[in-house]
Image 1 (cartoon, rainbow, N blue to C red):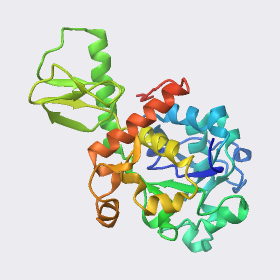
Image 2 (image 1 turned 180 degrees about the horizontal axis):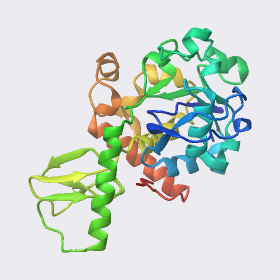
Image 3 (image 1 turned 45 degrees about the vertical axis):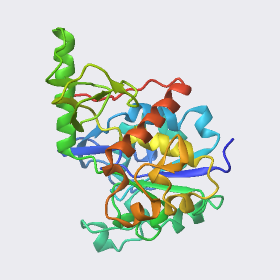
Length: 314
């Protein structure tokens, strides 16, 4: 049983998805977004490509067991018509389960700054005022930008930005996997192993990982390279699973909770947590740490009987 209800605030571009070049498409109905400019109907929208494991992440957020303790909202610095489009691609009909959908017009920008590409900040005092049951003790902002969370850094779960280069690697993995399926052959003990269910990180060494990412896979020799999809969203699920039972989200992050073993928070993977949180190295840059959190995320999905699906499409 969760200690208290938690609030997850989701960024969109760079966090849950990457946007491509502009294309002339009609913007979605503005009624699908809580705050927006209804006069914007025909804008140049950009192609939207979800981050790996977004389908599983979405199902986790709106699972009946998760909704017992978690409120989820979107807060993006993009303009309302773009936010409506991205939300539709990310959540489709499940968007009705979002607590709120906030766009650029909620950031308190001047008219000039609103129409320019300027650095923005997400002040969590605003959602706390809108939803008084939440506070620094219950809120987690998932965003790839440190600057946007600079006012409340201990409520920020910073993740790597999902960019077009990562998307291209994911497509290469998908194509390689499809080719292997179409033309099956006996695997070699050396060379390149492509796993559609993992990440675009490249790991070279004497051992690979099993399908659940937790134990060595026998039979891989020195020089074997494993190509895997980005597991960030799986790791986020693992982190949320720990936070649901924490009484103070900000305190947990500040005390080095991200650098704890997901299976035993009292043990640490990479030395003293205070030392780790004061370095410039981000938690997701530690491969072993990412593996531990992603493994916990996989276990959570399995317990909820949610398919673990990368969901990468051409």
